[in-house]
Length: 102
Image (cartoon, rainbow, N blue to C red; front, side):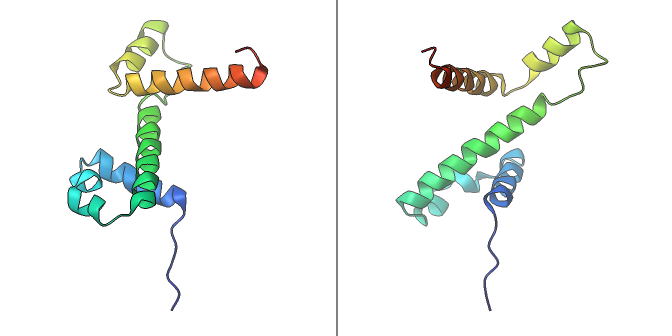
């Protein structure tokens, strides 16, 4: 019988749920010890992606019916503000590099 394979998106979603539930398995030494170097690197990448997805969901809201103060309060109240700012800065640098500005 063939094994069912999960997509990267499905694995990322599982990691998101584990992170949101504060499950310690992702950083537990026994779990990490079962993984080889490449698997640990892949796990780190998936964790970064999952954290980014969680962070962006905290600021994904309808902006049409709120004023500026409410908007910035919601942005600043997310516990992932630093991560969002870092990702935005990295995206701007990549865009500038593609345009030959830097």
